[in-house]
Length: 386
Image (cartoon, rainbow, N blue to C red; front, side):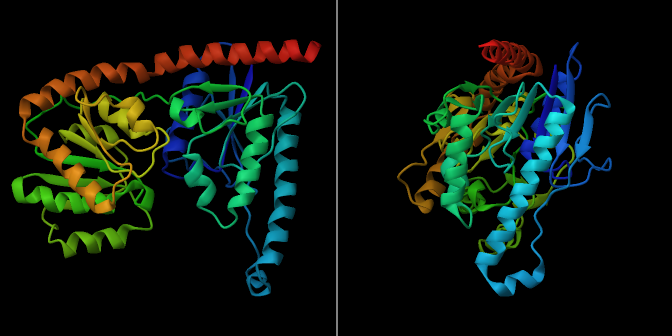
C-alpha cells in the first residue's frame, strides 16, 4: 500500500506539520506500507523542523504562488487571473505525481488548494484541521474558499475530521470519518504540583486569544503574585502582546518565550496548561499537556477542547460563547485561580490527565488508522469492479 501526504512544506513549526510527520513516521514502520510526504510549496533539502524517519520518502514540487511585483499596480483582477492560471498548473503537476507514482491513498488537508479527486485507482482523503467558519472567512475571497470546500468535501472518497463537533460542520461530505490526532511525547520529569508556573503554547495569532489571557493574568496577579505565565510561540501579534504586557505592568510575571524545540521539557516545568483559543479544531498541544500530567484550563470554544478535556476531572472548561472578551478574561482568571489555589486538586487532575492521554497514543492511532486504510482500499477495489 502506497500512501502520500500532501503538505505545503516541512520547514514550518506548526501543529499540522508535526502531526503529518508523526503519522508518516508511525505508518512507515508497518509491513507492506510505503509512505511519502509531498511538499507542494517548498523545496525539501533536509531542513525539516521535525525529525523524519529515513524510511519516509520526501518529494518536492515547489509550486508556490508568487505573483510578479509589477502585477500589484495592475489591480486585483490581474492578480486573480494569475492565481487561477497557477492553480491550474499546480493541480496538473500534483495529479501527475499521483498518477506516475501509483499511490493507493492520497491525504490532503482542507487548506491545500490541490484537487486530487477522481484519480483512477487512488482514494482521495481530505482532512479538516481548522474550524471551517474561521478558515473560510479569514481570506481575501471567502466565497471561493467556501465553493472549494463544498466541492472537495462532497466529491472526496473520504472526509476526515478530528472531532464530532467539527464533523457537524460538513453536511456536504458523504463519507466522514472521525480520526483524532495523537502524540508520542514523553515527560522529562514527574509532574510537580508545587511548580508555580502556568504555560501556554501556540502561534501568536488572534485566534489563540492571548490578549484575553494577558488581561486575565492582570486579575490573577493580585491574588497570586508569586506565579508566572510563559507563552511559547511566534506570530504577527508578538509586538502587540508585548506592549499589552508592558501596559499592564506584567513584565515580571509574563514572558513571551518564542518558539521551543523541546515541548516535553517546557510542559514538565509547569503545573498548569492554559488554552485561551477563540477556536480550536482539535488542539494537539492539549493532549501533549495531558501526556506530561498537566491539568488544563481552556475555553469551551469550538470544538476541540470540549471533546478532550472533562470539566472538573482533568481540567476546567470555562465559558466562551455569548461573552465579551472582558467577560472571558474574568471567567478564565477565575478558573485558573481555582486550580492555582488548590495543590491537592492539581494532583488529582494530573492523575486523570495522564489517564486521558492514553486515548491519544501512537498505538491507539495506529489501530484506528490501519483499520481505516484497509477499509477504504477494500471499498475502493469493490467500487472499481462495479
